[in-house]
Length: 55
Length: 241
Image 1 (cartoon, one colour):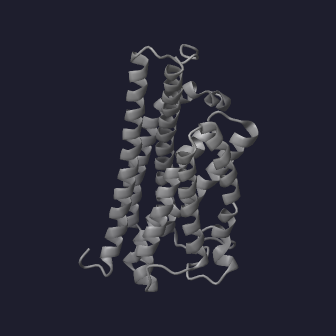
Image 2: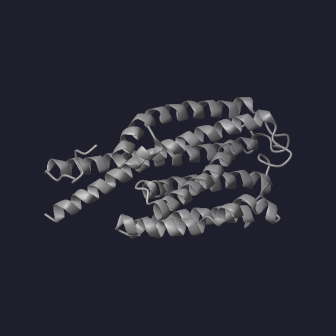
Image 3: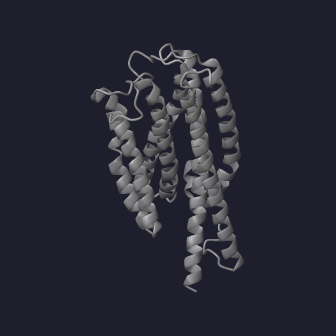
């Protein structure tokens, strides 16, 4: 980007985009793992939804 | 599978589990192809030179920021009118993704504006209405967090979302209604696009890839929200003995 005028602005835009999208993905991914873990813990304690087992 | 079957959260979980690997694959291939076209096929702009490369991310984020809000408005109608069981799940899950895309539209626009306009920010109608969209997204996220009962939060958020839709035509037509520093409509306009096809097709490719990425993120977030509500139900069941 050194030979491009204003190359730093282009690089910053794409790097920031990559960082925000990666952060968003990781946040959603780890939130999903946390919810599934909590659900598994509750079910392991014998707590069941009334509709569990229905299609 | 008929669309109405997806109203059942269990069926939605099964459907989304099958769809997600395909969505991730298509978005990854689409983004790689889109970035290749944006950097190695699209020519530099005759006026802005290489700075036009920012358009290939700025425009998709701006469009998807608005499309996401439109989707939330439809979901809000689904909550208030049709009482669709997944409508508020979709609206709540879409809000943080819409906020992130709006943030990226604003920041990439700012990084594009500084060298071309000479300013990071101007209180222009297009920029200001996009900033308002971002603030509305943050308000909706805060509302969902503040109200513990998902049913009550859903109704309040649906009303606020529908009130906020007034901002969408303001964003869209702001460059026509007011003198704007932001460039006017150059893609979907009477008389055809003013963008040359060698730039337009890479732009459409990026819009498509980002749209599939948005869909993948939304399905993931909706699955999380369904699991969160099941956890809440089980916790209440356990607490009530």
